[in-house]
Image (cartoon, rainbow over all chains, first blue to last red; front, side, top):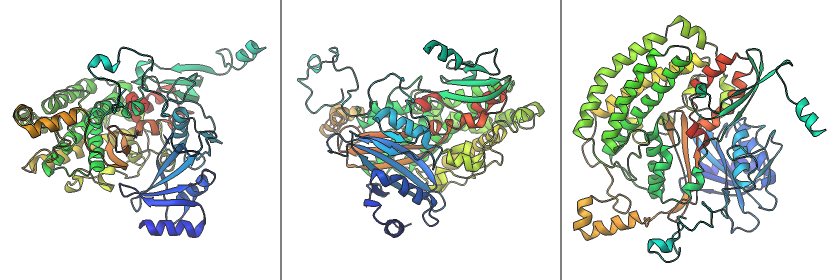
Length: 175
Length: 401
């Protein structure tokens, strides 16, 4: 399926749902949409007879701390097995109010994927049947994959770079 | 008041239902994860899986490691078939850096990945046997897996956490000892495998225990994101190796076995047939192994020969830069999927041009399909639930990342 055709089809059926679309580095069509319309777009992509992106391959979060008002990103990746076409849908949320409609009612597999995304990024999927942490302990009070959290305890002194013949940490972000 | 409501919410043994903790360290779970089961006698009424017991924050770790140091992390995802994870990761980086790997290296990778698939399926299927009460096959198949591990050792020096291959190709060419071991394996393994197959495939007890145990319909399986042998057992012939061939899989002739019922027996049979198909692929790849280099000519990514580092300026510079994590990495987003032993193993890599990934997400098939487990076992007997779990081949390392 040609990317232009997919975009045209979406524009025709639900105008204004796409904020932006481009072909990513690896050649996959990427669509950007507003959080309020993400569910609608995903449902359309799944159910439309021509597009038929029936399979939710993966869903995860990304944190861009420097993008004001759109710090958190949720990426959905869909796959049409009949024509072997993959597509990405991205939606950006503000870190102040990271709310998004759940897609568990479209794909059962979104259940744990959304729980994982909540667990690591604090993105709240409204309507999810039991949104709670999945891989981390329940009483953890941070969302560890957000960029502000260091890999290790910042107060540790045994990994001080100066002890290894390096001055400061400039340019090295290995932690 | 609070205490009272706590107790009234519990289902106790004197009531109708009993709460049973299956795991986290129960031997039958074959890994560390827990299921809180509500039991009505021997029947499972509801199940709630609790996972994360061996979560090691791989996605966070990967944001703090240069690309070549992420390979050992991938070892520890599905540790029954580490080479597939390793090579899948290398292919992802190669896709990002636009590196073309020579044909010989691609064929070598195919041989290794199919050996890994055989090793994984052997464990899974012989463990299904163990859980139905047939230990014998397991003891023999473990010896065969041992021979595959011996071959890994010839290729990369390690057995379980393999760290096999390098970005740009393979670390070394196949050694004469490897050739001998592989030829020996191809000669003697099929016979022993069929012997194992004869123990179980038409075994009355085994069939009675597995047919109809833990079935799932194709439609539900698709909704649950099933891939790999578990999906194929339901009758859907999705295989990344065929749909999006990587590493020259398009050169080989093999079939995708599918089941019909999606139950434990079908999963067993599909894996058995996949082992035979993997052997076919290995034979084809080995017989047609192209001559030529075993790694791409990409000095910026691929470590030079050690003697050269001591004698040649260029080699020394590249060695230093690679070890210090100073390799040129383009900006961009890349998704690469390989057919892991359990299904579509995907690497979603976001690079900002820095030394380490900006974000790396693993699409782990175990994590995705294990959430269907409660649905598959509700209403079933406890012993069937155990069988269903072992036939799903849930690997805790991949589950928890």
